[in-house]
Length: 409
Image (tube, rainbow, N blue to C red; front, side, top):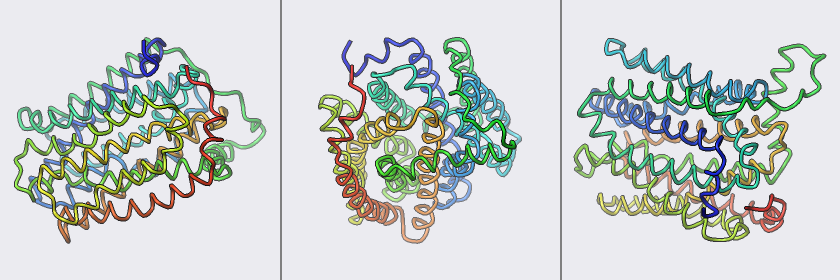
């Protein structure tokens, strides 16, 4: 087995990987279904983007308030409970008589459960994989992005054929199957030992847990810079939220919406596979350059590209975005184990919430100036911020960071 795929030798990883893949596939159906439904009913690029962003913005609250659960309770229990809650809520959304405002409220509740799930999943993977952790991250990146490619391409056709409510029912089923897989195939994985706060009040312990991840990241400049590099995704996610109005702008049919959504994940798959072929020190040094390269292709949208040119630009952006695998793995491996769930929850919360805010801002700008202009603004701003992040990363001495990581196997 190659080094990249060696993570599959760990049974627990196979369970977590498959459960996560099922949920990703179902979520893409739900996101595309709701975006198409809103755009068809309103004709508004801003509302369509806002609906897409609604699956991300609640993380701004839930990440801060709920990620600590991953370090408080057995991680298997957190994962299963979150899946069961999400399955029940999405099942209600799938009922045809549920009005759109109520569906939006239920979607917010679904996403509130995502933060503790992601924090528990991120905390348990280093325990399962050890020195194979980055290999596991690469596998997850490749297979998740492949799932996105196939899911986005198929979603528009599936929604057209069976309807938005049936797509939501499929999403609910994926959460239920994920819960069964994790409950049956993953060990208990108890949380870290107590943190010495047994003599304090419940509310004070809770707020300390909430703040622990942010404080840890704030005190460590290397972790802070890695978070900065990760949060650049708030700029490059804008084309994803504007796929529906952009397809209309260039005169593409509904089936091309899925292809537009799949272009960036397809590039990310290719980039992840290519990066795994070079030594880790090179991958770590290249983080800043690739971060700039992720936003730079979007600047070309100032020229109002054709559908074919847009697909090529999005693919190149995705190709460079594969740096997120190395950035994320490095962040987790450098995080203190006792607060790893909370630091990861903080990082993911900022990324997801930032993506949601980016999509909302892009949607508003697209309503005023058109989708191409909105994407171009996102690319320009992203490239400038990425240049600053790249300079900060260079000051962190990447070779020293690489040497501090566990040896790869």
